[in-house]
Image (cartoon, rainbow, N blue to C red; front, side, top):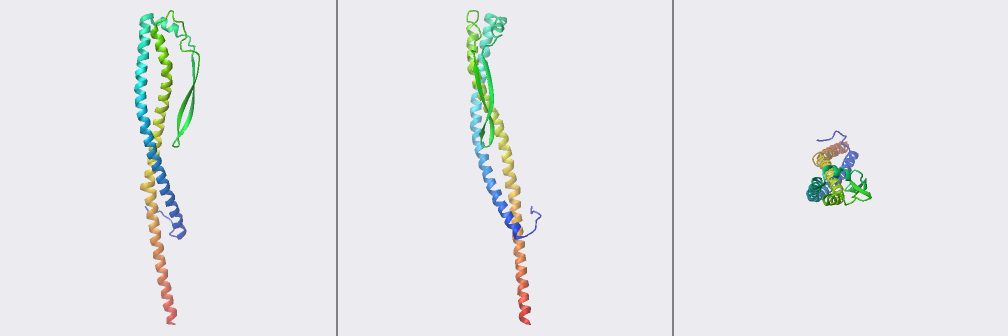
Length: 206
C-alpha cells in the first residue's frame, strides 16, 4: 500500500533510509528468532528429562513416607516431623538469555533435614527425608527451566509477529512508495525537460 506523502526527493531519501533500517531490523529479528528457537528446543529436551526424573523421585519419596506410616503409624510420623530443624530460603534473581529475562533461583540452607533421633523411627522416613533434601535442588532447577521455556516461547511469538509485520507490511509498503515517488519524480523531470526544450524552441524561433 502506497503511503500518503509528498513525492519529493527529500521524502524519497527519508524513505530509503527508513527502508534500510527496516531491512536491517528484519534480519536482526529473524536471527534473534532463530537463535531463540534453537535455545528453546535444547531447553525443552532438558525439561522433559528433568521432569520425568523429578516425578520418579517424588513418587519414590512418597512411597517411603507411606512405608514409614505403615511401620510406625501416621501419628508417630507426624510427631517426628512436627518441629523441622532445617530451613531453606529461596531467592529469585534473573539472568539474560537473548534479551529474555529468565528466573534464577538460589537457596540458602541451614540446619539438618532430620529433626529427630533414630530410636523411635523407621529407616524409611530417614531415606525419604534424605531423598527429599536432594529433590528440592532438582525441583528448583526444573522450575527455572520451565519458566524459561514459557518466557522464551512468548518472546519468540512476539518476535515472529514483528518479523512478519516488517516482512509482509512495512518493507513492501516502503518499497512500493519509493517506487511510486521515483516514477513521479522521473515523470516530473521529463515534463520539465520537455518544457525547457519548448522554451528553447520558442526562444530560437524569435
